[in-house]
Image (tube, rainbow over all chains, first blue to last red; front, side, top):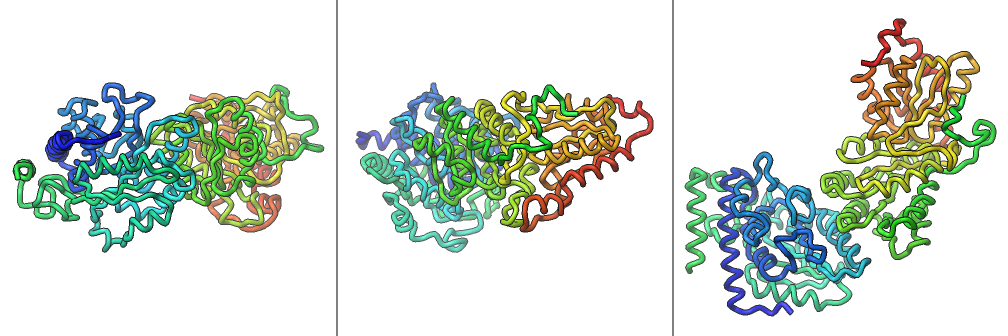
Length: 289
Length: 338
């Protein structure tokens, strides 16, 4: 259904690189915001907006579109960048992130920018919203799918597990959760702050179909989305193992980059502009390897 | 005397019909469900206590049971409303909005989706369950959130009408409900409009205006009848909509009387009395006495004995009226509205 060719994968990877560059540009311009998570999820967002999702950038309110609910709202720069590159709004507008009067609020607001679907930021409440959305759509026989992107850190929220139970009870096969398993949160590595493993077994025990993937492998992600369509009776979790800060090796896997923009990280030896340029260089270099 | 325009029930002082306000919700939500198939009802393991079971029986395919999970209750409903449904979410007010306030603020309020949050078992009149289950802070919590309309019906019949009206609003609503049976003062002919306060007891020269919300309104009417017999004239206004307040009616009645008593089964801080004081301090500053919980938690007991113990009965209202009247400005000119 969503079978994908090598050439298509290559094209999506190219989009992911553009999205990562825009993320660095917009965070540097904003002088605040989160770097690690958005970079880590760029491949999945590129795959969603350029292959998986049924959507129309020129008609964000299209009734039959697939819904993408972002639960961990703090990684919204990757969504803004992906939407801009997909044609929802001009890429230059990304540079207004977090500024007064911008449609690109620090955490996403549904009514601020068409296509955002919901307001989020406070963690743990996205999965239930997505489940409610999926249930309402099924009541009316709507065929679209609901994707909910979550973080690993917000698996510490009780609301997440209330939503997980609910989705399994109502057998929401039109719901797919994509969890960004990047092993970091603000205060440290997840397994130090609050051990989460075994996440796959926990979700299976809660009645979910679980597909672990490499979150930087576009082919694996697209295949997992296809597999989710074939699963009857259960909601699906795509457990995407990702590298926080992916593409910028000097900050990869360092939890201290969770909530810092260029110039404000833990190894803050560089002015913001210089560090932005270095990050962009690292992205280019990685792409040429 | 009772305002004839309010078209209240006959003999409300002698032998009033009794029903809880939540029973009005149970009837009203079925009517709302018949009128609009987008209406859905969710509950957190309290279908019967909240009277949501009437809707469950009438429309099982539109009834959603989320289990004992109030945060899930609010957020699932936010998702359903975002899709296009009109969800009523039902639990005890101590948990909804007591436990899920942030979810209500973010996913219903900021998201701006039409969920109707129903907090049952509000006030000390919950009775034997005790302090943990007697919500006394919900009006303060909910009127602080932008975009929410806040409604506290005075009886079962008004609650029925308010439920039907809330389903048609298309914006976030909080509705407060009581467990205990209370006098049914209004009739199907009593006018009802969200945001419109009503004069239930009128007199020629009131020295105090009593503003009441919820079923304690009946205690205010009892106080008014006694006071009139003793030669003190008052007016009693039913303020079912705590937000937005009916500015015109409240300012006009407060100005005419020159002193005010507010009545609510809720903490006196931040609730209904606070809302009246915020309005009148700007528009018509007059002395105000506050009937309600005086910064305390409740305890187990029977509803009526708790209402009396915590100073919210008609005798306490009478005393407050006398205190408020004594504080009136001797110069009528000071009582004029700006």
